[in-house]
Image 1 (cartoon, one colour):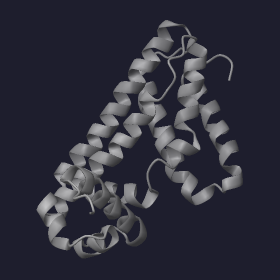
Image 2 (tube, rainbow, N blue to C red):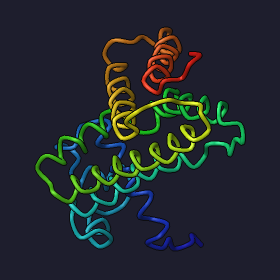
Image 3 (tube, rainbow, N blue to C red):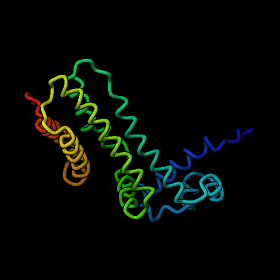
Image 4 (cartoon, rainbow, N blue to C red):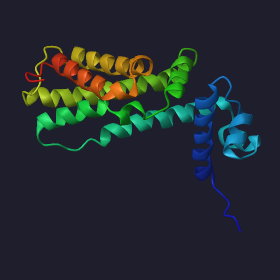
Length: 199
């Protein structure tokens, strides 16, 4: 006899299907019916679990944001601050970071945030978390005399702008064979922003 799935088991599968439909057809075309077909469930079950497409969007945004948060916590606890800096920058400019979430899905969320306050708050929360994490890391590196910046907050903003710009720029101008070289160039630029003596 087939085991009856609980909401905790089905909801992630439905959100995964929602993600896949957005990736394939765009947010505007990701109807409840299409998501249900992709997930292999009846549309009424989606309404039962989520209530509406809008609620499903918010839960999917939260899941995507958690993917990036988890990446930071996977960083090794390096005692050597130079190695810690290298590990941090190598993560930000890595294939893992660039491919953590579908570009089309992330762009859909960013566009949606311009007309949905709840999505905007979630995106702001992600960048706030990113900013806070980088500030803590850079503060420790500054104390260890590894980086030299006069304005720590400004350095954080510059690093985020460089990494986000790189992330989107790559999709249009960098071939796969050029990706590693691009990441190396960005790490050199980041180290210059941070006042690292030897790049």
